[in-house]
Image (cartoon, rainbow, N blue to C red; front, top):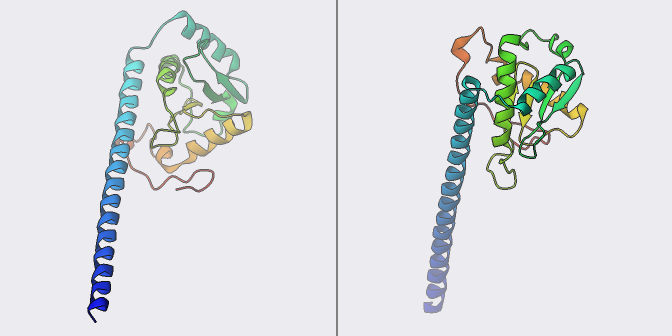
Length: 200
């Protein structure tokens, strides 16, 4: 009986120790996830502030002027990629003027377009530091109603480019940001993002 009592007592102690270790491990995982999640949000807020600053104070250089000229040549192509002649930038990926005509929400306003293109090119210098292998988030996007986007993982084919832009501009959070609805121009949480593999 004494042996049985010791065995039961030891089993209970082992169980309690195991549960305590599991709780501690879960708490550590939660703390780590919270930290990574907050870092992602901070990074997103930084990107937003940086882009707003670039829109208010657009960078004017020979490279950006050359890129704007190149854009004017590309804008009628169904899909296009525009990249500064620099290893430190990411491509702007876009669709044609006629492609945009399908959707009344999508519009190239010439008075704002050049400033936005310049700001987006400046933004691309920052976006290149995104690292899916280390970042908590898998991807960052800047999607413009003017028919182009920047992604931390650029499309690898014209078909992927067109599908990506079409998909992203149909998502509810993009549709809700209509310029004629100022109350919707705000930061928001969405449902879990479902990507190509429904990874949640």
